[in-house]
Amino acid sequence: MSDYPPPPGTWTTGLCGCFSDCKSCCLAFFCPCVAFGQVAETVDKGVTSCGLAGAIYCVLLHAGLCLLHCLYSCSYRRKLRAAYGLPAEPCADGCVHWFCEPCALAQMYRELKNRGADPADGKRRVLVFINLCSGSRLLASVRAFSVIPKHTQPTHRTDSHFTVN
Image (cartoon, rainbow, N blue to C red; front, side, top):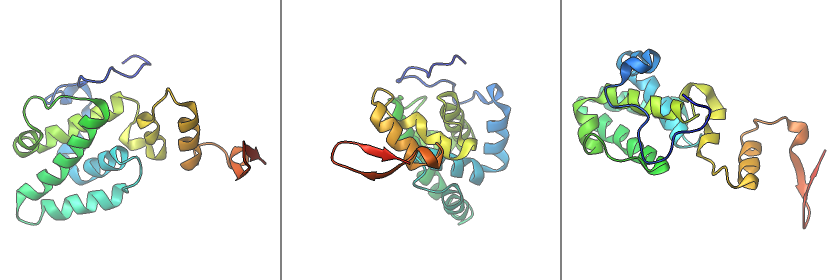
């Protein structure tokens, strides 16, 4: 992949593109709760924790009604598509998750990774969702997630600027 993020409106890999990233494929097939938790935390920009989302997914997966976990993960596919302007391909989100849940999870995982928000990277993943055209929003978001050192974060606000320790 190039250093630039892919253009919005197109998936970077297909639904059955598991061989382009074996890690995401194995994670989605053998540990779907972990894969989903990481995707959910990344899509929600850190608001939802990986552990909580993964635990909810696991409970729904083992609740006996296999449709429930598909509905839950499908809602995150919709959020991902909205964030990047992606089409509902190869069919509607619900159908993708119902007929091939592991492939759908792996595709979402790869999509985030290919767009610079590797779900396995922790707090750094939120940066991909920030409008890079707005430097002030980028700086505020970076500071909010403590990615930059504490000594450069603003301590208080005056009328026109931030003061830094």
